[in-house]
Image 1: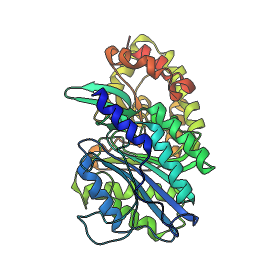
Image 2 (image 1 turned 30 degrees about the vertical axis):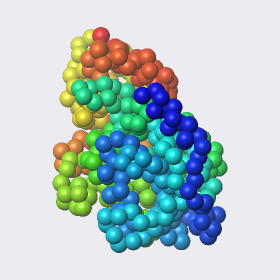
Image 3 (image 1 turned 90 degrees about the vertical axis):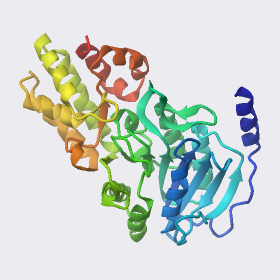
Image 4 (image 1 turned 180 degrees about the vertical axis):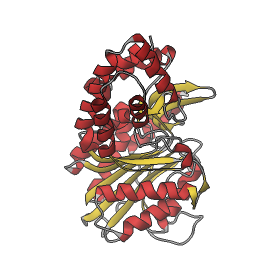
Length: 397
């Protein structure tokens, strides 16, 4: 296995390009460039071509570049595509701008390199960067028959992009484009977490993702892109809202039928107020009596959870605290709910997630889960700013 990985890395280092960027497509500064890091190096591979074909229903135009780095485990290649419009729903016909030897899509440096290349050849006033693959929120966790690894698992190398590395990638991306990344999105499961978003708070304006598992089809690229293309000067908030709305519609009797989903868009400029409010809550929780702490743990257990039961909706948790007799000042709870509502600019969900409000936090209620992950958690930006781990330690005594 080590030998195979070495050979792949060697050929990747040669950067074998099949064709240069075409003159006329590059260098024209457009309103938007959408950069999709599509990692099909796993069992989601078949959905990659489907999503690109959806993008082709709309295609790039004079205001919007759609650019994809497409790694396919079946094709044994990594291709860079400039997406153009066509009406064939089964065959990807967009121009292959470059063909590379297999790229390790679990290496965040390759995400940065794609952004660098995309910004250089398809410059724009505003940029959206998305990572397409499996996702697992902030955690690296082993479950039965499946090892979940933050985001962008590459089965050909065994690598993945950690939450911390994703933050580093967006920091570098912001430096490359000369301003904050206008929108970052995860077409992946469980990524709409305060812990994930906090790692890129200084480099990204808008953040979009799902608190819950996404069905295999992922984002509805056709309906979303159609709305985006119809408003070429859309703001980052508008693009994010379009996706939030179209994602939920697509699974609520839309193009993907019926599945239980949730999706949200966050304004990361609101993090200072969120940090401050969560820090105040943390300080109040630390002073609870033993009986109130037990009651708080029961409330945490009852809070809206997602596929991983230690991922909880922070607004729902605070709402339950506010409705209880736990001894916390109502103003502290109201401040945090207000901070969440200001940060989440758009949230949509199907009926099963009526208590989903757009941001999850890590809220384990068993000491085993806490102890397995607390060392890493202590170094996440969210914990550095709020000391949330102090409360988690107290509630799991």
